[in-house]
Image (cartoon, rainbow, N blue to C red; front, side, top):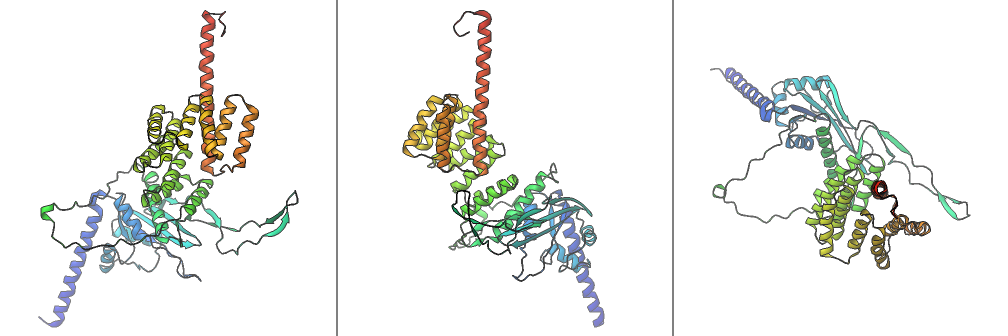
Length: 466
């Protein structure tokens, strides 16, 4: 056979193998777990004066949607073996250029994929910004965020205070209103001691989007989470010498900054997103009490006291020496109307630390819940002697109001303000719900007493109570 024929034959064989490989890949994408396929495309922003602002998330998003059983993903990149094989077999696609939706749809059709995702993530100041678009065919069916967001311009110069005086003549500093910018993207900030943690922030965005897709456009769609192959039985494991592995040191997230960001999200109406970020933070540091308490407070804020109680009890079982977690569980059970469960956590707290401040506060709240302000006041007085706090003064004010001690109640509330009672959204909502719950129970008690009095009046009109 001539040399030219050998060359042609080799090319035909290689082309056939490539075609078979692509067909096999397409078959795998279309049949594995019967999942719908998705083509993931990352939009890239141009390099600016500070360098490349883009944060790569396409592969992380592909891994997340496959692990949760939402899609069988293919990434628009030569690093993806299915996409690379399709390009080698003749797919007209330039991985270095952003395709139009029509070009993406043509590629998805060739790859037998039903959905297309466009995603972009980039750093802007101390935030990672992100946007995601989900298409079925060429029709957009979902995006996040649904509306634009507004945030402070990171490029503005530091504020300069102007000396002035208030109405009483005291010297003050006046600052101009910070400049803001409008964007179509969602901001996420996970901060460490050395600043913004890009990878953690980007992964938080990915997990947020996966959760949103489950609850939104893919709600009700059958999902089949990826099932990993189990480890071999002991007798079939290969004998590999063990080597010492030193785990990488991970930056500890600054809780102060994290909780400040969470408060800002809640004030901006992004409560669900705040809760998702907090859960990610707890997963990263399961023994962190501050993060677990923040999850409980946020669940209470969105009106889920039973979930909050279960979360607090789980944390108390994991970290039994922190009695305040047990107290949070009991308070949440009381708010959910589950006094039996509240008493179980209360008894556990009393058994562990009967005279601790948290236990006495819990006993005070339990008595308030039972409309026994006099007994509650005794515990609060004991706490105030040992460690006066704004929250304790607030509860004392409530007790005095229930006992009809108006002037004393006003004085205690003033003490709470002097002690710096928190104005954080979670704390304010918690106090409001606490007082509203007591008022509700008080009105029910009055109604029951009045009904009993009317019944008594019908049979004993001359009784002293009547």
